[in-house]
Image (cartoon, rainbow, N blue to C red; front, side, top):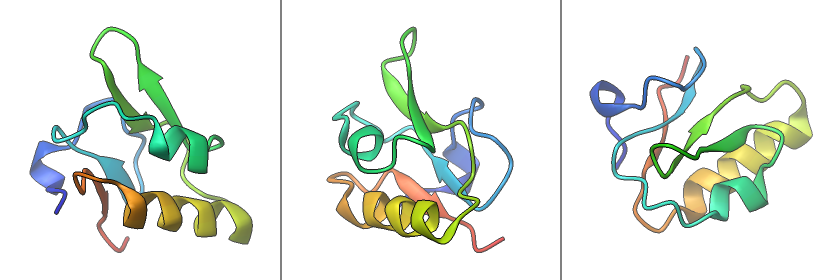
Length: 77
C-alpha cells in the first residue's frame, strides 16, 4: 500500500499520489495518461494533474487498483 510520507516530491497536491515503491512499469501512464507522467531522471511515475472529470477519476482509480506494487495512493482529500 502506498504511503503518503513516501510520495515523490513531483506529485501535485491532491488526493492521488505515487510513492517510492514505483517500479516504472508504465501501467498508470497507459491507464490514465492525463494524470500520470514519468520522471526521466528518477525512473518512476508521478501525478502531474489530479483528475478533474469523472472519466479521469475512473482512470486514476483503475490505475491505482492495477498498480502491481501498490505505489499509487489516494489520501481521500
